[in-house]
Amino acid sequence: MKLVILDPGHFHAALVQKNRYANVDDTVHVYATAGPDLDDYLQKIAAYNARPTDPTRWRLLVHTGPDFLERFVADRSGDVAVISGNNLRKTEYLARAVEAGFHTLADKPMVIDPAGFDALIDAFAAARERGVLLYDIMTERHEITTMLQKEFSTLLEVFGGLVQGTEAHPAVTKESVHHFCKQVSGVPVKRPAWFFDTAQQGEGLVDITTHLVDLVQWECFPEQVLDYRSDIRIVSARRWPTEITPAQFAQVTQLDEFPAFLRKDVQASGCLHTYANGEIEYAIKGVHAKVSVRWNFEAPAGAGDTHSSVMRGSKANLVIRQGREEAYRPTLAIEPVDGADLKAFAGALERALPGVQAKYPGAALERSRSGWEVIAPASYHVGHEAHFGQVTEQFLRYVTEGALPAWEVPNMLAKYYTTTQALALATR
Image (tube, rainbow, N blue to C red; front, side, top):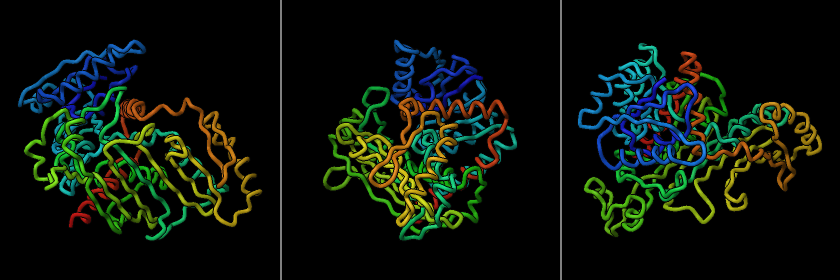
């Protein structure tokens, strides 16, 4: 198979190519506008090719100019299109790619507003008509603590059943904390100025929350088809800005001032307000869930982006923490509900563990103050950047097989319906 990269404006586009793939040609066509976004992408690929350990061998054929999108369609120079960049035109890119007959792997979010959601419905219909696959990059499904949280939630004698929860006490909560200033592939990330413009990048409610809503669906309703028209009810949604000083903006963009398109968001204090933070409370098939995302400028020393999560069962809660006490490493805890017979619960865990180890060799349990900590060998903790390769390999398998699992497309629609309807409610 041959990859084609369309308008790579986000470093996630390069992360898809951080590794080689056995059944993918090393020659890759790139279609984009010449400029700093393309330059950053090319520099990352060059660094992967030049690294001393396990270098890649990508040969890039770059096509630039104002007609790059038309040339991308006309040339049809590959099999799989990868789209990761400015989200303002993403639904247009998706539509043109599938209409041209490309299998399409798209970074999240596929859409950033309700109008985009309507266009996404059409894009999936076009993909079905043309016999191509359209898929988004859900890296968090490959994080080992989340995978183990999902696995233990299927064990009735340990977890019981997922409770329905209430608006005041949801059955599932997930929170993600991200940072504008961080390192990617060992070097400080350079953010494009448009990343701070929610008209181009999308608000926090429709960006990172895409991962969280996806995980709620993936863990709570595994391999079940969801219907966004009947299974999703938004209870409440809110959003608030992160304040970025001129010095901080200059640090991560290498620009001396805010560009004209951001001045609408510059406050009297001189700081930029970008609506990167959000919270959604909703019900999915009657189960109450809450997801929230926060963006800070920079993480504390030794920390990075973090994820926390609670799944409440009738017998135990499955809790992922990633704070200072956990040395900022994601840690999964199994905590029996109040009043549980701890001796009987320990016996149920002991009986269930071999089944978990059959899927995840080396997984172990360690007693803690509140219950048990699930220990995964270091080999499973591959890091966020490696997850892009894992998602890509999975997508390539689907392309080879000729189909996505039956639940993937309806559940992608359910996910983006949730985020875009939450945005509509929060901004109403």
